[in-house]
Length: 476
Image (cartoon, rainbow, N blue to C red; front, side, top):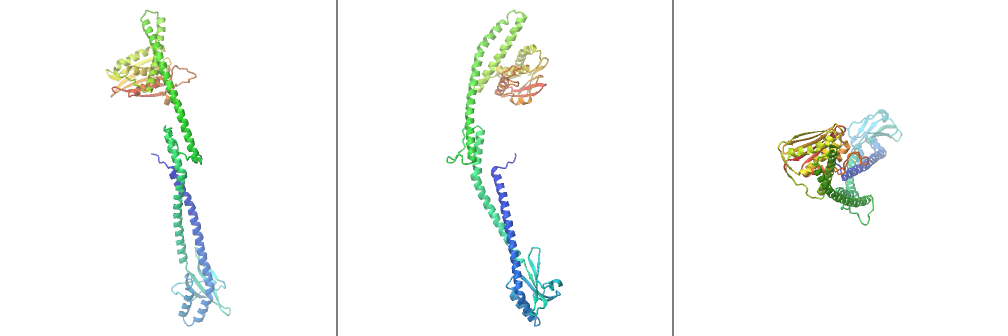
């Protein structure tokens, strides 16, 4: 079974993809802006703190450097408590050697070039955050012996950035879900549901329920394209319903005409055949007898057409025309073959039989099956040329009789095969009418075979001939 993605599922995928792109872009922009803002804020505060705290810290160091580090540590901690991003404060001389370290266990290195500079030096990490500030300590006499080094911790900022990223992503997902659900509900209500309603009704109409109508909002019958589509489908259904009614009436009249025609043909044909039967017993000249035989054959052909026409009309009208009776197959088939032999000889066609049905008895309507076989034989005769061969074969296969009629005639074009058993279809041009026939013979044959619970199949090849195979049950 081929997997099918419905319209509703396509809308869901489209909505999710669209809103994912929108909310994803918004989340990235917000995260980037917030991160940059936090980093810039940290850098600004660190610079401001270092600028303001350098002189007090430096004075405390110069004042208490000879009396011990405890006092200096207390003074420095008093300042650093005002800014939790300062992880350590170190005093180095102009060579980079450490003169005081608020946290002795933490190693720090400042090169001599940086330590001897009279300008503040800022060092940034890979994230663009200041992690070290070196500010020269200028004494009252203008000398530069020491530098105050501030070590900046970005842990709090990184934690804030991560928290912000998580919050923004969470809100983006929530916003995406809510927006997708709302969009889905709106699209379903405004587009998908109306389209599905139109689709369901259109399928019912296509299946033949032309009385079905798509419900349209009476206040806004053409409010949008969906309303226009529904109105168009309703109009089409009404038009098809009317056309089908006309076709059904035409078909009824045609069937009635066929029945009347066949009834009116039977009476004069019966009289003609009766006189021909009487004349056939007279002593006639060979030439005159040949002419009468030709008349008799043509009369039988016309009678067969009348019977086919009447039979088709009766079957299509629902009448039961199948009256089965036990029939000896071999005798029945030889009788059909003997009658056809006369026509084959007149056209110089080789007619052969291979009837291997033994003493089998089948139950069918002899007149209708004879008519069906005669249609196939007559069809083979029409499309065969002098010297071609027609064969009638029959055999018993299990509980069925298999009857085969084949010829080596002109064959049937591949594009004609699907229409072979349709009513009034002729395999040649109707305007040219270069072969006799009305186009009902094969249709009548198929009706007869199917009413006997049998099957008929045809195979053909242009220039090589055609084969018809009838499969009939021996008993019902």
